[in-house]
Length: 174
Image (cartoon, rainbow, N blue to C red; front, side, top):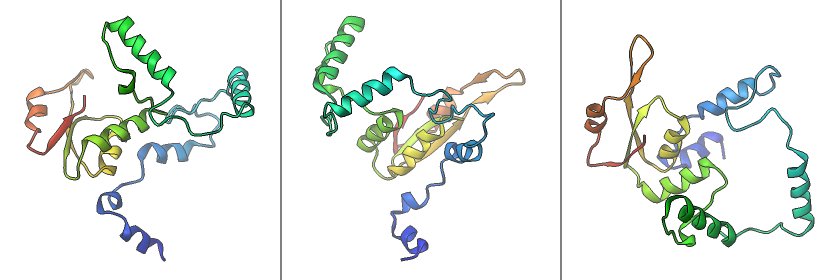
């Protein structure tokens, strides 16, 4: 099977995906010692010993299995207590679903929210990954440009933002 055949077998919304711009930039500068790598959460510092030691200890103690799909119950209970303490809001611990990062959280939310053809209205420029996630789930990005004056002040024309909303709009990202 050739690469072209493989690509053609993918769903159309996946075929349209471009290479992620952040990854392109990261690849260009990956081996440059003069670049501090902050573009995808990479640090230029080594992992602190206490984290490495705790990781090794957890592995030796047998913590090598999948965790609960919604996260550890004690973590979800702690999150519920935090919400109660800080905002006086009662939240059932089972309503929390900790994720491994922002992209994972966005993917889960967008997969549950969007159907193919649904639109996301979003001011641009923005974090490019939000547009990638929208495309991955089959949604359509509707960009609305910010206004930037000669002094560099940035504003968003709300009439233009709301004017971009259609019957297909599922969400507005701010």
